[in-house]
Image (cartoon, rainbow, N blue to C red; front, side, top):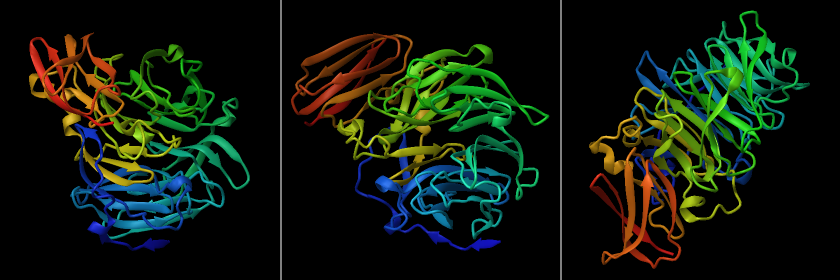
Length: 469
């Protein structure tokens, strides 16, 4: 076994772009780091980071971020999130775009789907924060996997590639965590599925994102066989079903289609798997490309969106998902500058919001690792809007603005939106019945300061807007 020894307190030299302003509302930056800042082993288009996960070390009550990079995997102590510490780095194939990981007990399982030669890695984290140990780094089980999910003591690998073959999805037993045992390949029972890009699994029910074939739901049975429970294909905007996640009550599934760009987030009712029904389509911005969803309970959804960053939605009311906050990890492109520069698949890859402290680990492919506090956004993710959160519930972005702003406000009442110039003249007004999710073209308004306000039941909230073309 190979022992990795690497412990370094993050110094100011590792923090990225200290003077950069990251547009945000209701999500605040605690700290950030950019350890993969060299020139060797960087992926195409300057891609340095990909997937992430987290681990809570119960014996020491410590929290860790596990972040995939283009040249390996970082294990970062975030117990004190303002001063993160890199505890270990496990090298992997260089120049990678894809690296994903999940944990089981004190082990981390890491897959990559970049071209051969590549390896599957098993890491023992029990000796953190001082070190980790590489238990396996090879092709004995398989060489490449696009994604990984662990449910109970079973490990699911999407798009499994061997040195001599390929399977759409494999499932392995982790009864012995250091020695996975192949239980079944999906093709043995459902050969029509040619790829499983990603999967979310709960209690052996597999919600499989099967790329251009759509969404399929399978059951992995006690006799180690798969049966098909349902499908959802041919829906509006159906192209490449990328990734999904289920609400805690098991009633609704949120998923993203990644190819082509700018497709909406989909929410579907999965209470009857033989008749999955659409519930809502959600569009963060007209040209945004959603990548990965992460759900907390029944009220909170986080969605990573390439150049436009991380969005948090209130999904407490089915069919009425509304934005509660955002943090743009990629301010050099996207909606905030009204230009995507043709680099559609840059920026925010994903996030991990499940550590006990509630902090969020978000990674931008080019810009680094962000540790975020979303408590203000989370406070808005309930069915009832109280007077204490009314002001933070009124969101608009970007500010300053030059072209178009996105406006969001959650309510069940009638409301009125107004824009006034610096001397109080009304230059725009619009009325809404219920929650507001709209866009305002400000491209023809003169540069300067404005007051954007929303009025509901006699109460008016005023916020300052800067227009600068």
